[in-house]
Image (cartoon, rainbow, N blue to C red; front, side, top):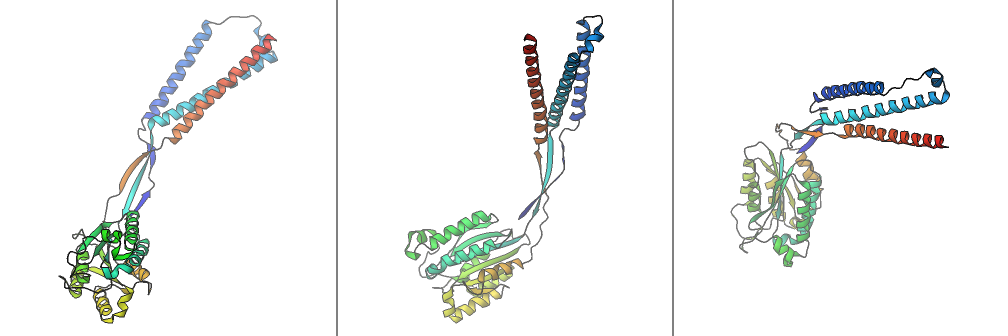
Length: 350
C-alpha cells in the first residue's frame, strides 16, 4: 500500500476569535490613552514662558528620544498582541492521506526438507532480492516439508519481512540439518520421516494461505524446491497446480541447482508452474530473482477504493515567533530606556 500525504489548507480553528481579540486590544488601547490623558491633566503644572524651555536643544532631544521609545514600545506591544491573537485562534493545517493499494499478494513458499538444507540460505537471499524489488505488495512466508508452517502471514511491513527473512537465512545457513538453529526453525515441518519434501502438498498449503478470498486481488506464489519427494502426500504436483489455477494463483518456481541433474523432476516442476502462468528458473541462474520480480510487476493490480484519511495538525510556529519577537522587542526597549535614564542621572549628578 502506497501512502501519499497531500498538503491541505491552512487556517484558524477559531477564526472568529481574531476580530474579537483585535477589537479587545483596540478597546484597551483607547481606554489606556484616555486614562493617561486624565492622569497627565490632573498632575499638570503651569509654567510661564515655557516656549523658551521647549526651544532648548537638550529639551528637544529628550522629547524626540521619548517619542521614539514610546513608538517602539507601542509597536513591540502590538506585535506581541498579534502573536497572542494568532496563537489564540490556533493555526491548523489539514492534510489528507491518499491510500493507493497495490492489491497483489505474494507467498514465499520454501521447501525446508533435509535435501534442501545446503541451498536454503541461498534461497532466502534470493527471496530478499525479490522483496527488495517489490513496492506495496503484501508478502508472507511459509516453509514446508511433510507439513507446512506459516512463518509470517501476508503483510506489507517490509522492514519486518526483511528481518524475518534474515533470521530464516541465518537459521538455514547455520550448519545444516544437524544444527540446533536449523532444527529449531524447521520444527514441526516433519511429523512422519517417511513423508518429506512433498512439493504438491507444500504448494497446495501455500495456495490456502491467501486471505480476503472475497476480494479481487492478484495472487502469486514464489515456490522454491528441488522436487525430490519422499513418500506420498495428499496432493501430487499436478493436482496442486490445478488448485492454484482454480484459485487464480500464479506460481513462479525457483528450483535448487541439483534439480538440473534430474531432468524429469525439473520438467515436471517447470510444467506445473508454467501451467499457472508463472515462470521457472534455477536458483542463481537465468536471473531468477529479476525474472520473478518482473513477472510479479506484470500482474494486474486491481484498485480498491478507499476514502482518504484526514488529519489536522496544529501549526503554532507563526504565532509563537511573532509573540516572541514582540516580547523580545519590549524587553530590549525597556533595557535601552533604563540605560538611557541611568546615563542621564549620572550626567546630571556630574
